[in-house]
Image (cartoon, rainbow over all chains, first blue to last red; front, side):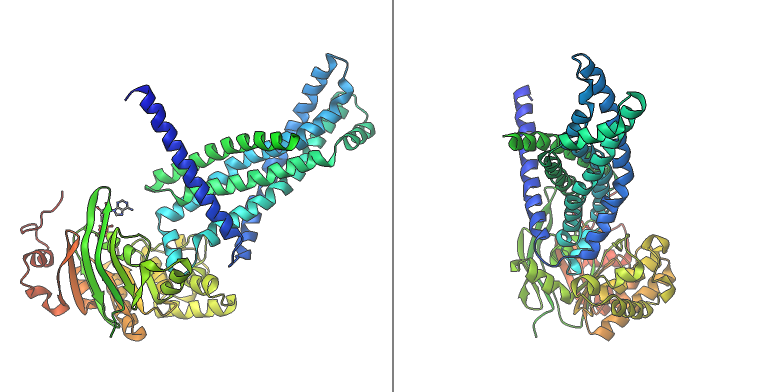
Length: 256
Length: 253
Ligand SMILES: Nc1ncnc2c1ncn2[C@@H]1O[C@H](COP(=O)(O)OP(=O)(O)OP(=O)(O)O)[C@@H](O)[C@H]1O
Ligand SMILES: [Mg+2]
């Protein structure tokens, strides 16, 4: 095969995959908005995706906030702007790092988990069995995960915002000689609703991506344990790439 | 009387191999049909096509007189209420307890309250001789034979008019296998359901079948009353029943 043919083939395969994913996501959205709604399943997924992700997200946020404060302090010192640490930390966390890092961490934790669980259900015929029991897998399995992730991610990001700012605050007050009260006041005076809202819009989009990609990979997996493993890996890679790409898109649209 | 299940001219190509090639089969209400045939001839594919898990490339499926392939999702969900299916590997939901598995259809398709669903599940579990103590365990905590019983209970809880059993006794010890056979016969008699079973096990086939049909090269090559299977006059059936490597069917090694 010539290199051109290889590029062509890879492009076609990617487009085909994108099309199949779009159809799947459309079906998933339709299932989210039409009965029956399985509230117990949504609740169960909310615990799994939201509550049990708190430690991961909290830890990520505190360290990122701390490191951000240090870097901004060093960078700001180059043009006597050290005092802007609280402003830039809160801006960076709410608009960008909070949602993106929470999204990427959950691409690992949640998207892979959904892909592995649903992939196992696929290869052991549990998904087929469900349809013979008059229950639609899109409504029973996919929709609760998509709903839970889309609603929980913004909540997690609020927590990440607060903890991230706290991380910056701790470093700034403990080792950079900032006054705590002034740091907090600067943070709150500077941050605007629009910053937080941008972060939450991103979070909801990332939540949808994480659940939809994981479910897509799991639902379409085949070929035993190997196939399930591949589904989980693909879910992490694909949702991470989609998160970063949509992060740019949402930011660009929002800034305009 | 309309047949409970009517498959006509089913064709299905998988991996460029024509697995089903004009397969035609029907089952009358209250009758038990056993499908026999070598490994990989398409027995499972036949059943999966009949219940809508696989879509045949050509042919028609009628369930209780209704054109199954023409139905939309809602229509299918309604039509599969008449069907119970025991999967080859059990296919129990491993995130749910045994009683939730057995009662799945009641809980999630029929919105029966949990307390009532649980009572009905335990009742059906008793029928398949699964003690109520197992109700709160997860499938992984049960042995293979018990899992099969649980899967059987799940298949029959809605009192379906048509039940499919894909290799109900494979991988079980002879005593448990025979107990499962008894259960199937009992269920079919008690519920008055039509049953379609797949098996390699001739002892099991003789016990549960009113009729036996043999698949070979994507078609039904012989069909008749169970008692005639030893005198079928068909060289392929004879070879299968004798379990011999000599004959028209080449064993794939
Ligand atoms: N999902 C699938 N994708 C591709 N090929 C398949 C699939 N399912 C079955 N096949 C192929 O179809 C053929 C028939 O498979 P099937 O499972 O119906 O066999 P079987 O008669 O049930 O055999 P066994 O007695 O071993 O269970 C096999 O050659 C198999 O490789
Ligand atoms: Mg089979």
